[in-house]
Length: 231
Image 1: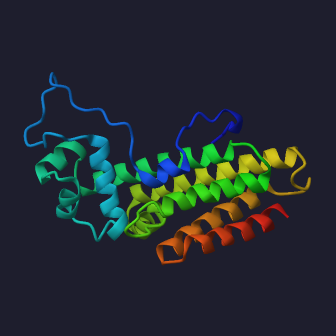
Image 2: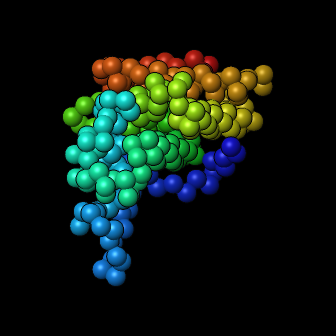
Image 3: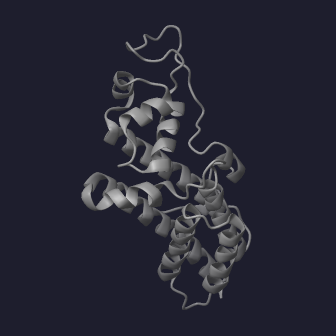
C-alpha cells in the first residue's frame, strides 16, 4: 500500500478515538424508508455495529454468543440477522471497521509532521488512545485480542488480520523511507526492517495493555523502542 503522508485527509483525533472507538456519523432512517420487520425503532447500523464490536472485544469471538450481541445492541436475533448476517458476518464487519479506524488514526499521526521520533510517538500515543478507550476495562487491540486466536482455524479472519498487519508494516516502511531520504536515518538504514520493529512494538504494547500494564508504563516502552529504532 502506497501512502502519501503529506496529504492525509483523516480527521480522526486520538481523543475522539478514545471517547468513541467505532463511532461514525450515523444516518437515521427517514420516515419515507420502510423498516424491515422486527427492527428496533431507533436502529442505527453504525451504533449497533460498534456495540457488537465492543461485545466481541471484551470476551473474544468464541466467548461471545448471539445472545450477548443481542443484549449489547438491543436487537433481537431476527433483526441482527437481517441487518448484519450471522455471528461470523457480524464479527468480520466489526474487524474490518476496526482496521479502517486504526489505519486512519495511524496515517494521520504519520502524516502530522515533525521529526521521526516525534512522529513515531504520535503513532504510539494514538494506538494507546485506542487500547485504553474503554473506561470500564482496558481492552487493548481488537485484532490482537480477538482475531489472532481465531486466525489458525478461520481463513477469512486470518486473511483480514494478515492484510491489516501488512498494511501497518507498509505505512511504517513508507515513513522510514522518507526519513532516510531526509537524512534522519543513516544511508544504510533498512526501512523494511525498521518497520517490522515499529509494528512489533505496537503489538507488544497492545498485548501488555490487555494484560493490565499501566498506560504510562507502556508509553515508556514506546519511548525506549523509538530511541532504538531512530538511533
